[in-house]
Length: 324
Length: 244
Image (tube, rainbow over all chains, first blue to last red; front, side, top):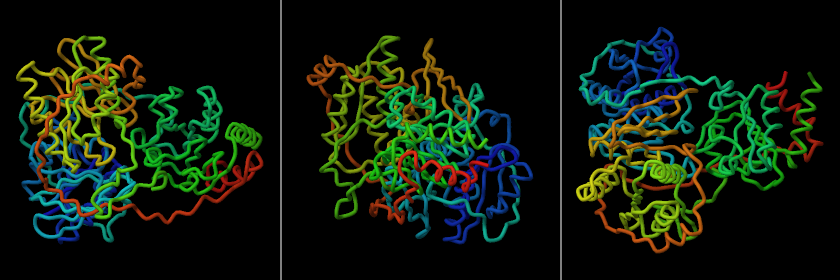
């Protein structure tokens, strides 16, 4: 018996969200003395296998075959279910990424099993029952629940779990496996992928300069862009700003926008609605510039400057230029 | 989390909604707008369906004001529905309508609910109806009974090709929803609503309790006020390693 974790990798590395899912899955497996198995699609490089050993994976099952060259969510779900039945797995865990949630939802639909998203703690109660703690309302509330299921299908809340290697690395046994697919499973697949030459991407930026309604106008973002450029970062905006049409939705930080995890989030003129804060929970340091000393963002921030960003940011840009 | 105070009912089972207002959530609002735009350029009609308590009628009327013509309310008693039962109730309603009027070319959903964040009702509906499904759409293009769907993936765009009829869940940002016009809102007030009451069934997930996370955060350290704080801000950026 084991807990199976779906790992998203790119040959040589494992995504941060998958490392968090592995940490979650390993803790669940420990509550019932089960092994930790992993499934990945595509050949894992040596580096990937080493990382999985650090995270305590006992068995790795790479899925190969021409059917898996383009991402096909139903085919991935079939692979997950077939491997889960063969092991057998008492729980299947995936990262709370778009792909992780999508594949697990298909696995739930194909099998009729319940799929629970946004989990951050799981403990086996007995055979057929897991106690779960999961985020509701993007982390504003916590739900504790019991899941009664022969196989628990779970995805992990990105902001709720830290990536922690195992106490001792494991010896990973690698067994490739080819799932049985039918034509239907490949009907929906990526027909084309186009990379964007976007400069620093918001999701991966080390520094994000955020602008909200307080910026005052679409033109007001020129100076925010300039500051982000000077700091080697990206611009993020609040939902109010995209609703006003000042900036594109691709720059929106929040529950329904991009979730960011920078070293520094410099938030200017954003009050800090729950929807926005849900997108920056993983920021290491938050510095807020706001006219309102009682704005929710001041509670979330580590440092604050009270005042009008339209005076402070130009002065900050000048001060940074003067240093160069 | 800071930003809003959410009250929980004394039994720890639900949010105390007595003093709350409701709106269509962001992804769904965009799904309604997308449906209306598709019909504006390709013809047809937009039907809007919601499963929820009697208050959900207001959201149906908002959708009607935007341009939906058929309003369907699967009325509940306020209990929480799990994604499996929700999908089954939607499919039952869809099947009944399709038996009379032929298949919906496209069934749109919001990518995930802001409260439970289940990410799966659209996918479950698609499987029950044996239709193709793509989630997280940021663009939909229709031609010759096919849909080309674009979505974001790791700093790029993925494209999918689907045969209609199909199911697509959309994300906020696919469009900028309009403000309903005054005539639209007047019309919506009088629009007929088709109400039915599907049966609630317990799922495999049993909620024990809800709670508000404890926060140990303290207020931010104040660096200063106005432009006088700029030197302290620069110093902080150096300390954090952002400036050399």
